[in-house]
Length: 190
Image 1: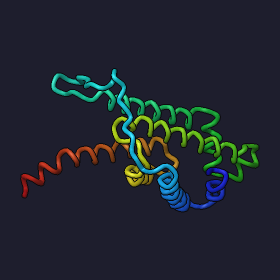
Image 2: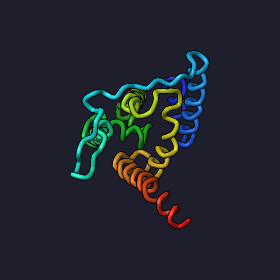
Image 3: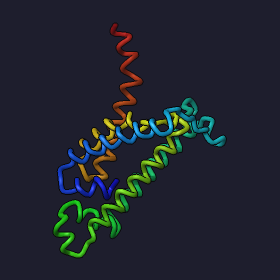
Image 4: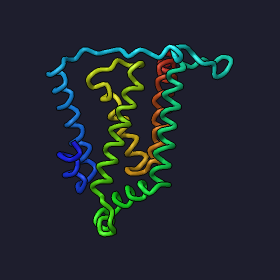
C-alpha cells in the first residue's frame, strides 16, 4: 500500500493523502466482506482484567479500560520520545519539513517514510487488538473514529505529536463530558 499508493502522494498536500486513504479503507472493507463475509467476532476480555478497579472509594473503573488508557499514554510518550529525541525522529522531521534538502544531505527519505508507515500500521493493529474486547472485531470497526481522529490532527497541527496529544485529550473530554452531562441537562430543559 505504501509503495503502490502513498509514495505517489507524499509530494501532494495532506488532504489528498486523507482522501486517498479513506478510499482505500472503503475498498478494503468491501473486498473483505466479499471474500470472507461480514460476521463480527467478540474477543474475550482477559480474566484478570474483567472486573473493576477502585480508583476512589466511590469511583470504580473497568480494569480493561484502564489498561487501554495506560497503553495509549505509553504509546503517546514513546512516540514523543522517538520523534523528538532519537535519530529516527530527526530523520522523520527532516524529511517531513524539507524532503529535497534531507535527500541531498544523505537521508534515505523513502526508506524512512516506509518505516514510519509500517510503524503506523502496527500501531493501528495494536489499537484494533486492544479494542476487540470492548467492541466486536468486525469490518469497519475503526471507521467510527476516523472523523474524530481527523479533527484531532487538524486541531493539534499536522505533524505535531504534542499538539495532537493535547487535541486528543480536549476532544475526548468534550465528547465524554458532552455524553455525560448534556442529555440530563436537555431532559431538565425539555
